[in-house]
Image (cartoon, rainbow, N blue to C red; front, side, top):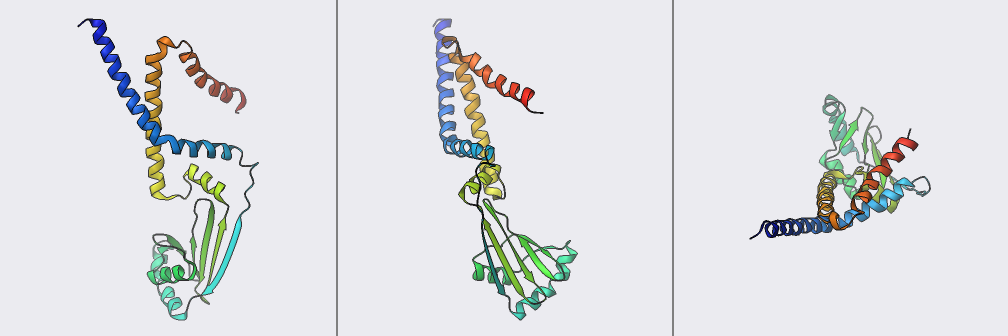
Amino acid sequence: MTAATSDNRRRAYWLKTLHEWHWVSSALCLIGLLLFGITGFTLNHAASIEAKPKVTSRTANVDDALRQALRQQVPAAKANKGKAELPEALQAWIGKQWSVDTAGREAEWTDDEIYLSLPRPGGDAWLRVSLGDGEAEYELTDRGWLSYFNDLHKGRNSGAAWSWFIDIFAGATLVFSITGLFILKMHAGNRPFTWPMVGMGLVIPVLLALLFIH
């Protein structure tokens, strides 16, 4: 076996391996790239694309027994810097009253009220329970699907599972980009415009940043 034949086989092996990693990572990234590409455009033009929030407000009253039980838990919450999860009884009442899941969220407790912020992608919400008269208020703000996907792009109030998805997606795009770079390198000998095009991808954003961003 000649040295040239050995080099050709080695090159063919690495090219095949790179193509396999490249297409697998591209398949994993495809939908994510579409999502982040589209929302990158909508975020860049957020001022021109107005969202019309829809606000829904509801009120109810907790019964005296539950209100008294809540008042008894105020000292423990205040000892924890005024932060504590809602008791299971109140969580169940809220879930039955407004179909809102409050599990695992810390509320702010004072002598007069309990306040819980419920931010979410594409909107916001909060609820308040008065410990004086038992009045409960819930307000939901929905900014629409566009705002929802924009918030997913930023990872805003989207939870641990989505945060993990963004990390894995970022890793897959790195594999996609790096394998693509090596594939370009292996084909560059037959494609003279390869490195000038790659260089433009670097030079253009650098020049824009240096000349127009202050």
